[in-house]
Length: 481
Image 1 (spheres, rainbow, N blue to C red):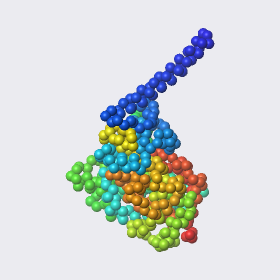
Image 2: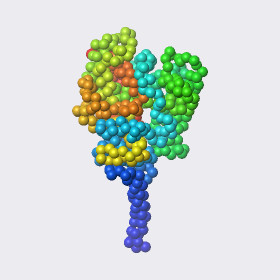
Image 3: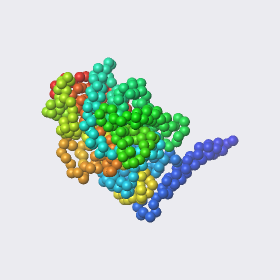
Image 4: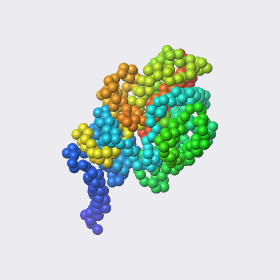
């Protein structure tokens, strides 16, 4: 066989599959955009639809922030893509997000990816109204303070040169969420049972956003197995609640309220729905707060001047005492800590635990010169919206003072959305605000610390966390500011 024949054979071997692949990608793109609404004169947003069936899910899962930053630079504040098995438009910027969130039930409704609905349940996200948290915050305070104080005491007494903060904070927040949201008492699970639940929850979260393929060893398969372990333990707890006439601990936890709300509407208690609601409450109540609390430790460790201003505020309020004289916290005192609240806001601005929210277009809607066809998913980006908000100057700087002066409500309402917004903002935001403020107070008046690796590299998966788990050295606070 001559050289030309060998060359032709090699070209056929490599070129033909490449051409077939490119043709498949093109056909896939045409198929995805064929759902464009012809009655609307506006074009689809710019963007690409990725690989057949997989879309751009793999790039999103593997690269996360790098992928999203590249998309924003290339396509701007609105672009189309294909994620988690659905054509999707990603939206950012205060005005664009405002249009989406104020269109709840009229233009859009909540629609999480198929993998999330399969693992957490089709009824997510929760039926428990945020107002029910508001009226019971005073019951949370002593439980949270007890758990946080005990945890910090263990950190200060830990042997070894450093502590990995993120897994420690996750365990703390899990214990708090189990007690307050589900009514688990510390004795119920035991250390081994608690660790099993923590590990199962982490496995479920890792696989929450995955391709909707339920086959052995797939992400969805692993997530469902972990979910079943959690459901079994929660069912034990629910049946124990049904058998008791009065709640333990003197107050009603969120799961008890949900059960009463269901019965109050004349509905039968559905065990599967209760387990799904309880699992979702745990997800919202510990993963996100663990992320925010870890970021708080990182930012305050890098900005000692801010930590000192927090302590100065505590001193003025009579909260900076020796450990054996520490004042018990209550809601009245917590609400007076304005600067501490601004530190939490600034942490959530720079490092929001949840990068965005999911909606589905109920009808074709027009947004900033583009159409979003009926049935397409819409993701509004929290982190990108914070990054591009005109409301903030020196956006990369950690400066809690920016929140000390109130901004005009309309301009700030959708520039700062760490808990989402509109009718379906985060159900646990009141719980999270109280928890993070107590955590900050106890941390500031108990500990000094040093970040051993300096500023952490943050990753999203799906909650924001430090890649190195934030190795930190803790020592007791001397009381001098």
